[in-house]
Length: 281
Image (cartoon, rainbow, N blue to C red; front, side, top):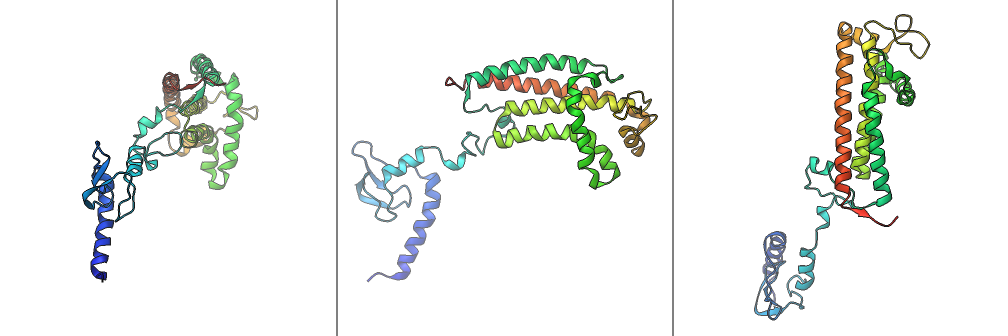
């Protein structure tokens, strides 16, 4: 009759060994006759050796199937179907191309990047001291986003409501960039989102610069000297109105640098993506 205490102790030892052996113990197979003398899961030794096709009498695993499972990539190593691994560094993940991209989409993205690079030259070249970018098509795109920001931030008080216009037109494309990284695993799309963020900074810079000596015609048809001006209020509240032109130049420079980095990032992604194209259209 079996001793229950000894049986429980044996089962506990088996479970403890299973945890450590999954990682540390190699699979012991005799390559000549495909036998094994020690279970790779529970560590139980056999004399004589058992054939690899036989189940371990202690834990019931089949060594051949166990070997295949250990040899294949662990599902836990993959973040999802895109191939992102949990142990990838954040920087490495930012430069990981998509698993597959059609050739048509790749060349379409290449043309888009070239056009954006040319457009960037003009957008950054507009004189922020006179608000030349306000006459561009890009400003017409960003203006409704700016005005929507005032509405969205209204519940948070007067200061945040006024800041919300400029803040939202920068934060929205940045949020889109983050979404491309986290949800779509599309770093090229994220780079384009970052490019839009940089353009928003360049677009805001004349508004900041203008607040010291307001000359720009605002949405209501007046200048800041005659009507409300977001950045006159904001910089006055912060005690920085005298530095308005310095802040305007600073945000214009930051926007230009970010624009360049976004284009370089997008170019690197296309260069790396070229090796992972799906020829099927």
